[in-house]
Length: 275
Length: 46
Image (tube, rainbow over the protein chains, first blue to last red):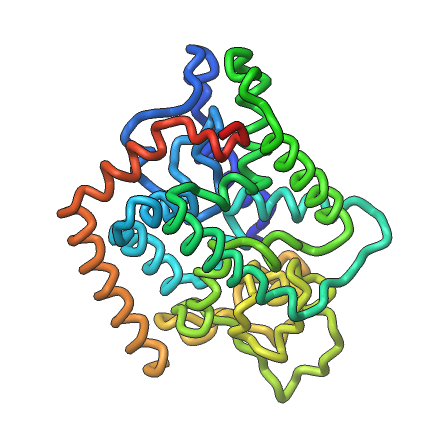
């Protein structure tokens, strides 16, 4: 059985393994790999980050008023191939949310309409405002930037501590709020805020990797929703924009299948561990 | 399946064109130089 936990752990550690920087006192990695945007929300100001953040890069291109050709050329094939699967399998921030939700507390549900908010964040904070102000405003408020960049940079490099001001406090409050929400709600950041998830969601309808449900056998028992990290019932819409293709529903239900263009139906080893 | 193949092929073709234009315009260097500067916005101090 493919253990998603280990893939997520690899997805978190591999792009953030610039240990040499810590040993040599470098604030960030500045080599050629920084020209690559990993298809996940991973802050490029993290002292350990090798790759660039696609949302940070997108805002940069908006600020310099230049079309992000290469960025689109790398993100679109990922979306076409697997839809939002990168959210479910390799995003470090998604992994953090999955881990914190495991803490046993009473849980809350998000209203369905909140899923549309991420498209507003994408258009307003990532595209329009950076274009008008030439400042990356999503970055200024991003809790992932605080975890991976803000806190480690200020802890490791005392020379920048005097620059800490109101914005740092605002980011701290946003991060603290989300950390609490992560414990109470399934992936609230992915569902409400993440602009990268919003971009990839459009590809769920046409991606080569799809989920199908055998509706003749489906009893709508709800087990798919119970295990779903974004709280959807997959039988209602197998190519839902919200689905992060984590395949948890495939793992627990014999009536949910993975299909690809190359192999029409793969009922595969995901379930073998259950038998 | 064919219904999905056509849009997928269209987007893949479009991506290839974007990549070629991006390489021509040195987007790689632009992303690299942007990522190689410590982003003060990301860390919340600017």
